[in-house]
Length: 265
Image (cartoon, rainbow, N blue to C red; front, side):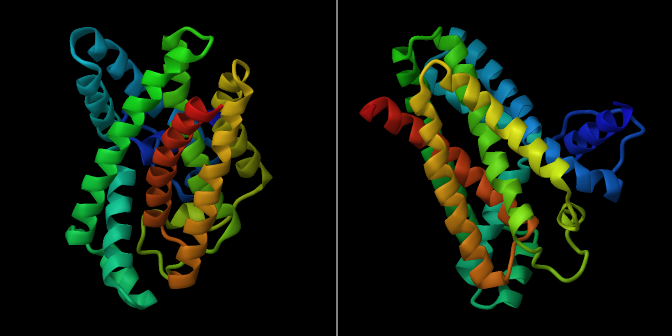
């Protein structure tokens, strides 16, 4: 149990800005095993985002509450995944060879593709969250519980989709220049089972009230499949930025899928 707590806090330190015990560091061995808890970190980020939304909605409009919830998620993770999304937009938008794409993604500055991509991402995410949680009132649930599960499921499922690329594809960079390199070195069945369990559990709980919500997994993992294939085509695998971009895109796809299910089922 003590070792698992250490691994969990390693995941929290790596993926969020939440303070951790002083004895936790970026030990490569623990960091490699921390992938099993990546979707569980989504529970925390999604829960914080929901709480900010819930209490903000008491004082402000739903639109403002949604914006504040997005800001809360960004502050919790330190824009870790959004930064990866921007780097992927710049790299794949401006590079035409593997070497050029990887060089651009490693550059800390943001380019036109990254800036435009982030603006469009945030606009779509705002509208998707606002529409998804507004429609949740038609479910035979307390709307608060339903909204909480939607927030948490979006973050956990999208993180499962992202980390699953580690289990099926090779890391693209040949050196250890990326801080995400340790999680790409090796994994065991414990990482696969742990990530799957924590990634799917919130959605499974939500589906007890309306089983059709499980269908949201289909577009999320179809998106994940095509993103992974795209990365493989251009850079022969993935990088940490690719995982961050996958998480962000799949999170939005999840919200859009919920909206579609409310509308047609």
